[in-house]
Length: 336
Length: 289
Image (tube, rainbow over all chains, first blue to last red; front, side, top):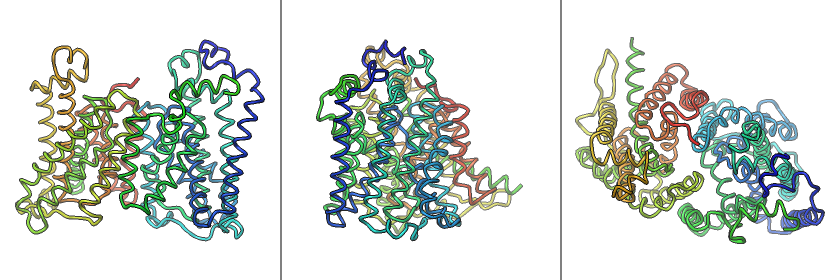
């Protein structure tokens, strides 16, 4: 990482010990968020709590996708395939091979990571739009398989059934489980983005050619990021099963891949928590909109258009006029 | 020999549909470097407008309904370029994808409001009703219209780009927009025209295909995927590439239907993945920086 010192913006945090004050601030924020959501799950009316539970699972999906989008600069439309694979692995294992939920819970992320490796090996050879559209093809391939191989996947209906153990099927306990899994996953992803690996990933996003010239294996770094993202997208897929006890082809449609990207953009893709904010705004906002109007797509489209044309850096960008600089400063200056 | 006839005719009609859906997309990308996720929406509007113009009873009005629908979509396209696309030239791909995805959502909702959720049908015009016999196989007569339109569009675009003033301006805009503007050409107007032309081709595609499909909200999302496969495999911006890719994908789809019907619809994706694994920038595309 020593070579990075040419870029003063990226210098100190990799090698030097992280300032204690900042770690404390991050930990305190995490405790407040998780604690607040736990209280919400315990005391909110059940229907609202279920909406929040749904948002928590999708927040993990968005954070895992944003590892590629915000940190890696990779627009992947393949994440729905990995999300769906997570859900389908649990449900199909249960239906065909009598797996318990826990077997599926352990196996699904590994299948997601393996699928991500297979997709990434090919897709990362391409760049930019070709990458976005090739990953979209992988999602469509998964969708078509789930749709057509109905003897194995149940086709259009998908797979559903009482896969959860009794205590987890209880809504409030399922909520706490979802929150716990999402929180631990986000903590691990936080460790990834703050590691030297995460910094290298961002440096590749900023200037790929320079990193290549410095001898960094760009392809390998992006592939590892893709696999990690795939692992946690599949975990989010498992949380979908906790929420609905089902898996169906709509999880694998390319528009589903657009959702975590929208969430990240709405919340701000250049901050770690932006996608979490975006997931809550998107999911709960949509719930609200669907009740208010039949035209929620129209409203969403207009809002998205306004964000893209007027505030390309998302809601987080409203806080700071220069999110890029703010992001860098928060990495390099203690307590910023 | 029968399977050969089926394979060839199936490939030609599938390839023609794909080419009609993607020609406008690749034209717009070639000239303006904008990827338009709402291209499928233009296609859907072409098909829906045709259902409204033709009505349910008769197929006689079909021949003037098609060009009217295509022109109406071209007008919508010009409006979209003036209102939105103009602001996202040269922006990051993500910005373009998001802006045009927003348009995709808006158009999907508008179509649902105007035409409802139920599927609509356009009767096949009388003169092309039924089928003809080629080497002992029954081929729907209407396939001739689709193949003919695709060839006309392909040749027409080629002539336009090679022989007309508009054509050389478009080609100059691809290579060097600054010099073109410096030479006195109104680049903004040129881009509006190109975008409207791309939309017109999408609307024409939707209008011409409409008798062969169930016209429902949601065809926008499925068509755009097919169009993306073709444009990416052919190389973004290459009309010739789109034509070749349409033939390849059409052939793989038809071969899939004959060899393994259960797996047929996966074939185009597998073909795309295989081709891009070998040539990451498509058959006729330029490596992107």
